Length: 351
Image 1 (tube, one colour):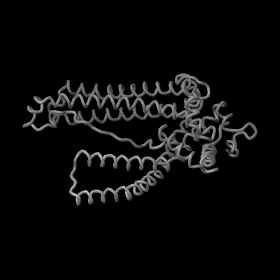
Image 2: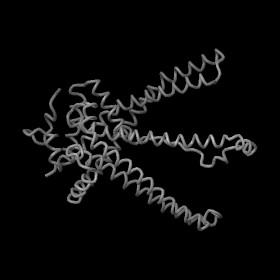
Image 3: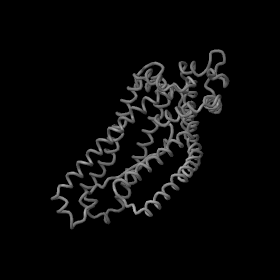
């Protein structure tokens, strides 16, 4: 019979403590920070967004519009946007591939109690590539589904003339917007749930048996149908743990931000004052220096946040492994030694 949630959390906590502090090693900590960050276990709730103007013509002063078009700058601007989109897409694909590989590196690091990036990278190439392909297809499907859910109602509203006199159709637009928004929220929740289940329970099967995502999902689906309450409890507990971790890490991140702002902010203010006294003005050189300085500050902040978040990056995957290990004998055999069974001691050999 599977153990209780408290016992599973205790095992995950004990493994995290042993791996990080018995003994404490800076090299391991840095490697785990890198792996956790690239695998998506650090800063899952963060993100960034940027919006480009959708109406280029409206962003140009009317008096200069004809001159802008005649000079050919509009074409150059559009080419720049296309290149930026292509570069962004390439970057997303590359980062997704690295994320897929690091997911298996993180799995090996927790199972073995030692982070060996190169060794795990070479060993898990096959399943990691299949997971990468799945992530790309999954993302494209999510984008297509979102476009359909938003695009069809939008086109229907335009065809019905609701936007020609919106003041006369306020109730219809509001109710339609609420309905579409609700459906989009449900879609996001469903997609996030599927992604978490595959990351937590299908990836271990792929690592241990070299199977495909679909094969692992079919097995998992049978297990979930046989134990709906157990998996629902797992999701609920993980949500609660994530909320608690977000609060703790949010406080830690704020402290890290202050630590970064004090030296970098002081240096920046001094640099601006000295530059003004020396008669420096903004030019390509000074702008480049400011950009490099800002990038260094941002990278320092990310590094410190990653280092602070290492315990969470180990605990949450360990929690999912111990939960699934109760239901997956191949994984349980790796988590516990044959002599002890599902206990809390001697989780892995001391280095």
